[in-house]
Amino acid sequence: MLRSGPVLPTLLRLTLPNLVALGSAAVVSIAETAYVGRIGVAALGGIALAFPLFMLMQMLSAGAMGGTISGAISRALGAGNRDLAQALALCALAIAVVFGLVLAALVRGFGPALFAGLGGHGPVLAQALAFANAAAWGIPAIWLANTLSSILRGSGNMAVPANLMLGAGIAQVVIGGTLGLGLGPVPALGIAGVAIGQVVAFWAAAAALFLYLRSGRAAVGLHFDPAALKAAHIMALLRVGAVTMLSPLLSVASVLILTRMVTRHGPDVLAGYGIGVRLEFLLIPIAFSVGVATVPMVGIAIGGRDIARARAVAWTGGGLAFASVGLIGLLAIVAPGLWVNLFTDVAAVRQAANAYLSVAGFGYGLFGLGLCLYFASQGAGQVGGVILAQAVRTAIIMGGGTLLLAASSPVSSVFLLSTAAMAAMGIGTALVVKWSKWG
Image (cartoon, rainbow, N blue to C red; front, side, top):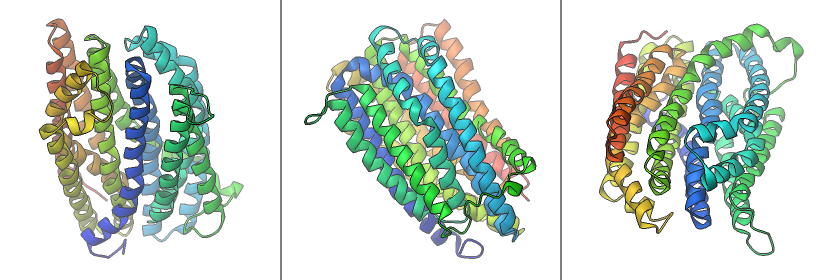
């Protein structure tokens, strides 16, 4: 099916398990924001500062390095080299361990300076640190769980990682809600309790995925052969991964710059913007579900030198992501209160969130298109051009933001700038994929 099955049915078959599992990410995000909303406006502002940083960990491990790993394994399988695929899986595990530990230490050490630099102070800064200091203990688990999932996805196995991540999402909601709000005899730990739910859920998911890959049931498993742990394989993954990691870094940098600009308009506007941006981050799992399904299909086609099929998969996936994410954008424009009213009853916060979504929704479809084509490009091993297109988004935000700050523009101008930058990223990525030479 991966090598020669009909493109759209095969793509949908691979997408569905991811969509079901990543739907749990939406449930978790809604639940967490609802918990935090009950804690107070300062907590909502604090999580608006901290959330992009931890979304970055997901994007780096699942999207950037994860897509790189899946693409490399699928191209090896497409070329008929299973031994190389097994060796790449072991090297990927080593990379995940190192990155997870290093990034956890960086968040613990530099979190206060980062959040203060973004404009956090007083109760908002305290809440951001309470969340980040607890959640940092789960960063190694996030890297392990997403890397092990990517190894399985590289061979087309979407169901096992999807089911395990769905279970982790349910556990995160239950544990985070219990500890955050203090249900029953459990004392309320506030925003730190919500973070602990994430830590426990991801460590459990990482352990389950590791055991499955060691069980011998996976097409590409983990076999601890020291001879397979080669520096050449690690460097091959890192050469592509280093470029692809620029994508989430640019994405989160864009959000952080926008967050810094919004902070100037007060805690109510910041809290409302945080609610709106959380919906934007939820679009990523939808585009991810389609995009990650294109990776093994494109990779195996490239490995088998079937370039026409690889391109057909990329454009079919891009169209599917554009339609599905664009539909959510349309709903956000027409009825933003369906999302915003879930989290707060403070009028000023609702007003800011509604204002953001009613503008940002116009860019969501193109954002989904660009993100899906980014994953397809990972399957092809050609990522430089799509990263450049994403850099355009950040450049627009930086340049336009400088002008808006100098002119003391209203916050509505910031929201318009964000939408224009998303649209430019999607259109630019599509043009790069159209003009690039794969294979």
